[in-house]
Length: 211
Image (cartoon, rainbow, N blue to C red):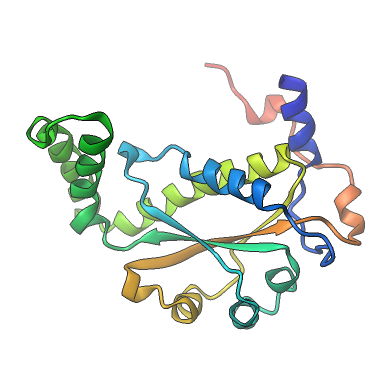
């Protein structure tokens, strides 16, 4: 298992050039998205939304506000990861309702959890950090999705090179209490010589310190 994981992560490459003739299967796409859904989040609030952009016209519009990056339209699938902008108002209530429904716990018995989440988010709101916190949560899901894709042999290209306000406008996210954070292009690498280049990373001892 350890060898398979490291092999997949060494194979993984942030693809810029995709083979337009190859498509990710529905089954593999579902697993990647499910992995994102199952990703951990602070307090289990899941302050994110994954939008799979299948409409070619919409993807063309997104390309225009993504500095013309070809992978927006060339990849088999494009996922926009957005964070919820209504975290402070709604997230704790929704969390305890979900816990109550799934685990069969009375809402009154979850008041402690709700108060704890409200308190933590309230502190972040006082510091003006709620949006930054919610965005950071989204990157956890992104990482899990990318690792899952690698284990499936599916290439992934994470993207921050776009204009979030324009992406939000194209997708009508503001009215949904959402805002784009990052995108993930999924597919199979095309004619990109850098894809086979030796991976450059700092050594284990430089990155890891045992205390």
